[in-house]
Amino acid sequence: MHNQLRIIIAGGGTGGHIFPAIAVAQSIRQLQPNAAILFVGAKGKMEMEKVPQAGFIIEGLTIAGFNRTHILKNITLPFKLVKSFVQVGAIFKKFKPNAVFGVGGYSSFPVLKYAQTKNIPTFIHESNAFAGKSNKLLSENATKIFTGTSGMERFFPADKIQVSGNPVRNNITNNKYTKEAALLKFGLLPNRKTLLVVGGSLGAASINAAIKDNLSLFTEKDIQLIWQTGKPNASEYEKAAAQFSNVYVSSFIDDMSAAYAAADFVVSRSGAMAVAEISIVNKPCVFVPYPYAAEDHQTFNAMSLVNEGAAAMIPDKEVSQQLTPTIIELFNNDKAMESMKARLASFALLNADMLIAKEIIKCVENSNLK
Image (cartoon, rainbow, N blue to C red; front, side):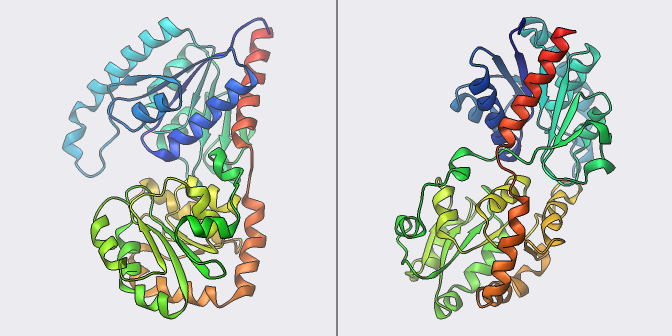
């Protein structure tokens, strides 16, 4: 190859955007150790901390997304957008990228848009089953669009789509735990049915309330619980669970691979990464989509599995009535659980990060040879 790969990776805002971006960067490093990689994110957002922790350099833009709830707060948006384009121009001048990869989130828009005006190859990853606004706007002029799920032709030009799946953290794809060892890690008993409850890093108030109200019922039904509550009101949930020896409760679980290995069944929000991880670890699940996600994309994510009989779903507003009875019913129905597992297998797309990295490198090499 007569040119070093110099790639900018743009986007962020949530773990669902940042972790896949880091996974792709690590795969590019593995394939081309001399590749120059620069991340570009939004100042004050999670990526400014997580990307350097993973050993990569990041530049921050002064940018904010469109505020759907407080319209007046958008007054400064055009100014911030213009300012971010100026910042992007300076970054490009200095770094001279020959490829740009965007993972969504509002910081990806000015970076990819600028690259497209300069005819630099741009690649997009859309993790959700309902495409985000900035990805839709950028798709017309993108070189290639990687998607987490199939059926995305209604959002993007069909000839540019490649279904890659969503890049999942390494320790989840290569789980080292036996069920027994994982249960011991959480201080729980082997040979007991175990439920994992996750509401994302911010927690899920509706799920947490339903679990808290039914702790004694889980004991009665001989079901163990690994319960990640998220930070809000964590002490209240810890207090409620203190008297139950069948419950492990924590505001945040560092080792999710152990949590998945210990569980027979999962209750979770349906962010794109949660859906990808649950498919890969092959655990039957009840999804409770976050009702305020942009374009209600979490419902679309969940429905792509529910329609195939690979998972169950309960709307957020029905959680207090339906969640516990649904869990108990499924725990008593081995046939339904096995059927879910069999159907989940087709959603487990492994090595998405490597597939995306190889495609980007190949496209850049081809454009360099022309």
